Image (tube, rainbow, N blue to C red; front, side):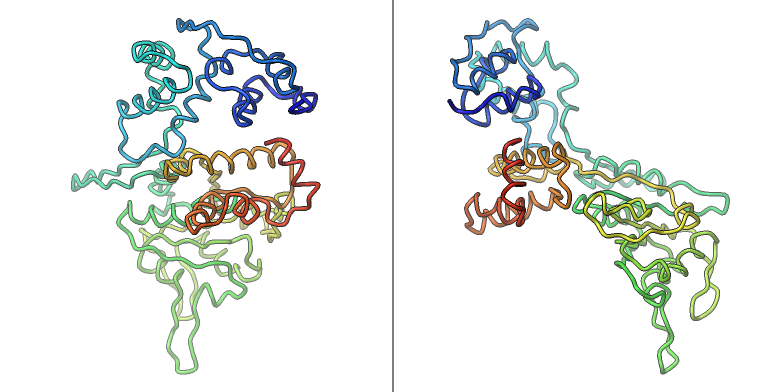
Length: 382
């Protein structure tokens, strides 16, 4: 007996097919066309999968989304056109299902059609300046970046961009997105992290009478994209100066009242929705009052797995698959204080390149000291 299949009875057929492939029990069309009871029997060591009917007119094709995910994982780069994507998928389908080139072409055309170039592809951004005709290629970006770009071009009644708050898990590229927004708009970029004193935001006048400016003042007075990172880690009392500046077109600084530049774009980022709700996600974060939250428009910034895959070299596709299995298991089990973000993917690749074994890397970037019982539960769902 290889496994007690009773533990897998609640899984869907697609999940069981993936499990059988990952365990190396069977591959190809036999898995793609297998029924749930056949998969459970195989996991329980009670026989083998029946031979599939090799028909490709819509029947017996199996879960093509799984084939696509495996084919495209870590291989899609900026600028890859539809023909190149089709070639990648054709190689995967041919090797996994044993088809002739003609059968592969027919399968792709009839089953995928125009969806192929869009499915599991990352977001590639090109920005055109209509005034000059200049086009900037920003390459692969987070799937929410186009919305951020549109929001940054909105204007309220005072001709200012409404302050934008990016909220989402750690390691999802919020800071990178802010930098790329500045690049897209041709504006300087200003940044500060969490603060515990308002002077770290507004600046101060030193003992010699010289005003020591901070990034927020520079962006506010001169224009630019400003990011207040880790806002929900800052002391609420320290952001009072920020609070007033968000609501008006002017703000008080140690050198006096300053008018907000029309090209000042104010962003903030954090892991929570500013309601002190981080403990549910494993974060210890501050709660900001309702009036402060009301000054922002919120933009959810989740993990973008297509972007993650696009940035992973093809030779590390197996590591990416491992990270995703653990991530899915952690989510399914509701494990607290165990974030499997894209940082785990890229830190893991760096450690693998340095010569660590996969087992060592798993312990370093995925398990991170979880108790044996909890880790066993996660492994059981992988």
